[in-house]
Length: 209
Image 1 (tube, rainbow, N blue to C red):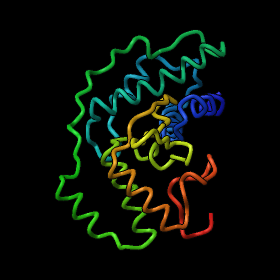
Image 2: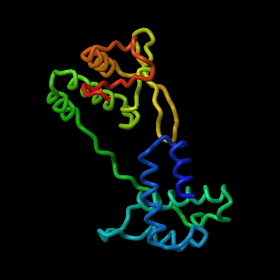
Image 3: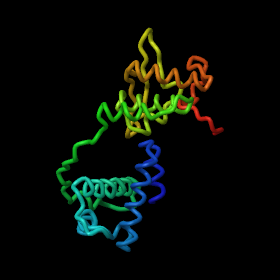
Image 4: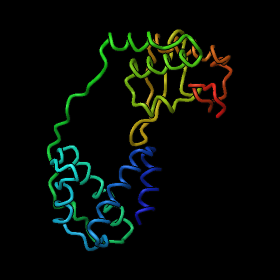
């Protein structure tokens, strides 16, 4: 049941990272508890969600919410498969999440980072990656997964398509500095975007594969 759930989760979310995180949490929970899924109570879930780890620190609201969400998702799958009759997580209240403000690079930090890159094909590629991350604001996996077919040029404007969290797709304009850097990087590797195969990665490597 666990492997079937994780396989379904990967197909639906498209995120290997989420699957690995869910796998760790579920194996830890059931491994420590020593009960089959139909023997788990709401009290068991509460104790796990709010419990401390080896560090002795109390879990944050984000961690508590993630633990409950993971178990609840697994139990919804078990209910659908008619393996269990109910979801013990339904009796728990989710904590109010208060995420910490995101920390980013300042304009001066970005300039220093770009200035440190060598004027080589790999350096130009890394410059294009950094500028795309900065200007597009997308997650790392979304940017690194871009293919030649992800870029669409309409007149003097360039657009990119992406596959986001939960398998959602979208289309946004790619700011000119990032697009120009991308074209320069591909040119350094002897590639022309218009002639690339649709499934070819946008970020070429000097190492085969």
